[in-house]
Image (cartoon, rainbow, N blue to C red):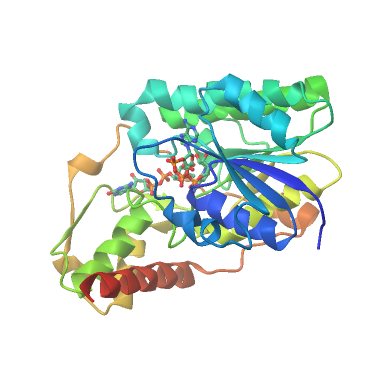
Length: 332
Ligand code: NAP
Ligand code: F7E
């Protein structure tokens, strides 16, 4: 167990933030998280940690802050003096980024700049993990993509992340800062936000099976993604900051599946014929889609000995079963 390290997380209430917090607490870290002041105080993904008196207020502390509020972020840094910063916060929905491009770019691109500037001013070296994404490759020139593949983003989200990823490299090269880009491909779990396709499908399959929903409307069923499990991907984030040198790593399974295959697998878990319930509508199609997003995990396997173990079918099964349990609770 590593004693005494202090981690600061932005995006602690998100899917990845919640799994990473669990991992860091297990490893003996004191964990600090930045949370937004919102009208809804429920932070469901970390509620089990917040309500545990052995953890909350002892090894887990939450600070109010917003990515747009540089003075507050600076104050939090001064109080916490983190050894490691995991920058996970930001608008993370690609489809939505076409509707709210300005705030998406602010939260992703400018906020990362703001955070790197704060880290640059810290009195002692602070390691930074930046949550980059496969979306920087967009209309990729090759498949699978590696750390060397040129950036060709195809959405406002991808453009903002490409800026932030490049900036992280520039700060590493120019100021010798320890900054790593984790170029993560889609990773899912029962904690995935409900407007991402996997959770939408898992939730619908379960609710239809329980008689709580009648049909499911999706966008492009032929779209393909490289899907892994979030719990495994946050371990990759941690490993990057434990290595002696800062670098960028693709985190992926190397395997792709279509949205249709996800639907088939999810409805198979509840033993229902998906064709009877699922339809496709232009309303959920995007102005542009990346092509052939499949990542090569070769470098991270070789350098950090990380590899994904949860299979596509295990992931689908876990997500649908978690949704079935929720439905049963709702009905009880
Ligand atoms: P998520 O579930 O959508 O969580 C996003 C987090 O960011 C939430 O904690 C959210 O807080 C916080 N946030 C958003 N805007 C903020 C602001 N202005 N100030 C402070 N906090 C703010 O995302 P995720 O799936 O965990 O992903 C984590 C990061 O990895 C994101 O940057 C995402 O873009 C990136 N990424 C994700 C994937 C993936 O497949 N999951 C792949 C590659 C990269 P609230 O709870 O208050 O909304
Ligand atoms: O879409 C298609 C959609 O929204 C996956 C984020 O975590 O991963 C995520 O971005 C695919 C796309 O994830 C629906 O058009 C069809 O082709 O689940 P998604 P995403 O856009 O890949 C990357 C790596 C990130 O960095 C992001 O933060 O599924 N699709 N029908 C649909 N998608 C949604 N959301 N809803 C549908 O009804």
